Image (cartoon, rainbow, N blue to C red; front, side, top):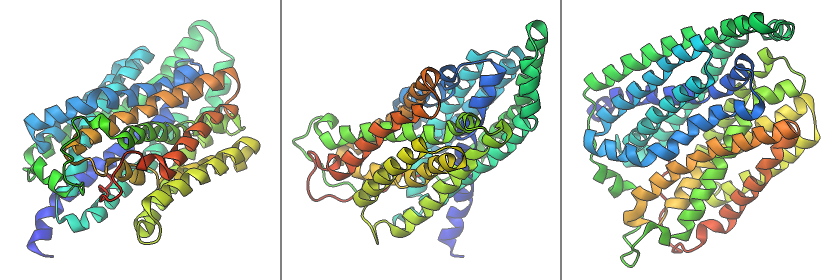
Length: 431
């Protein structure tokens, strides 16, 4: 191993652990939605406030996170982000003890606020930490850490919360009054141990990063390697780039359907007749699909297929899969929803470069706007939940169809609106 590689090994291991945490925390929502729906006696619409509280934080914290990092630097910023996530985990203690749904939501918002700061710091950090020629390899490793962590998180928390789901559900139906409240309090207390452990681990990792003396990187290096073209001097505002605005909308709808496809699977599986102890783990299959697609994307794009073609094909495939999920039932319908996640794996890595190309000096603010677009994960699951309450959990999937049609439009035409014909793509960040 060369001295250069040794220099980057420890920072890469630490950053890899951060992406592991991103995945572990993010995809636990697919477990919390059906769990809190039962423990707090919620409607579907109310249950999907879990995703709303989590993803709305990206909208409010994206630009403040950039300001914080400018003052603290990347390494200290990551430590602050982990500390905020630890606070969010510890908020689950009073939330569980009082079975207060608003407190659970506040804890999720705090965790996501910390994650927004971490993502804003770690994405450019992993890109610049080492030779730019191997940045794609480092990003792919981070993406795999994210997805594997999600699978492990769903498996562990699902086992803790739903190991006797069928018996608990049957018992709750027979209770009322004080007995029902007592049983629901016991059910809510199941999150105490895992979230206390999570808070302690996050706190320790915050201290580790603070003491690790990670090499600081110059944000100017990100600009030098972002792949953008020279500044367009006649442009005075980022909003003078129509393809950027269309791209932010594309991220908005994409994250919305990605979150629905995974976080709605637990309740949808229950609707299709599966026990919650089984249905709560369906999200693992979706994350496996995402991981497989991620590997394929690294291999195929752009050697075999262009970014815009990959985005167009994945959007078209999603339209086929969602229609098939709507007209089938049982395992077949579940399988088609899982296939959505496989097709989704090509979207994030292609929407980013197609949106950010040719922005020049506006690349940073364009990136911040894309991060804010993640708020789609807050809005669309909530709409899905409302539709499910008024119809059923299968019909509610119709909300994804106009989203996929828009993504297809952006892939075919939208990314070219107002953009120069010749521009180098900006490397995608890991998700």
